[in-house]
Image 1 (cartoon, rainbow, N blue to C red):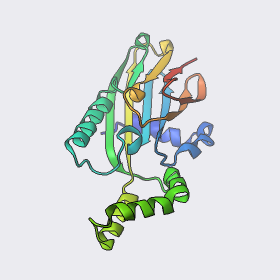
Image 2: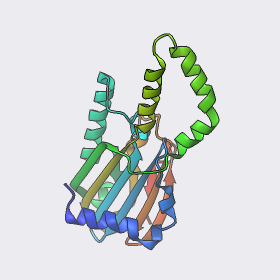
Image 3: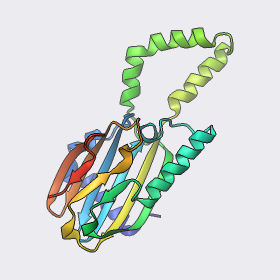
Length: 212
């Protein structure tokens, strides 16, 4: 459950003018994720918003044992916080609250990656699919299958609240979500710290946020 502090700080991220331009990074794009961090004295609020495909490789309800295991493992990783994000020990930050929603229905209206994919490969993919499955599926099932696939967009939404005994010692935040994950390509980070706003993009080769 979100604490009042979590709600207030995460809401502030969406309304602060410092982030007005970077809010354009929000659309549901596979391979990408958004991380927002706000500091208020000794408190930190961190919000993760990602297409499920960026962290799981799929967005539908788990169907196989492997997919069920992947959802369970990711949920545990996010709930413990330290499995997903590592803050330098000198700041002495401890988790107060974690609100985790895995495979939540996407609230984003834009699906940029799918639009691009459809423009470039729609006809080719349709023809290949017809050839491959003509003997196994009738036309009605084929249409239903693609309608279900097209509408299966899910997100992973997490809000963490932390207390830091030595907030002035905050020096680095390492995002561990890239480890062992071949689906995640970049994380757009927006921060509002006591020292001011900061924006950074993380990649598999650059996973650490260096704080001033």
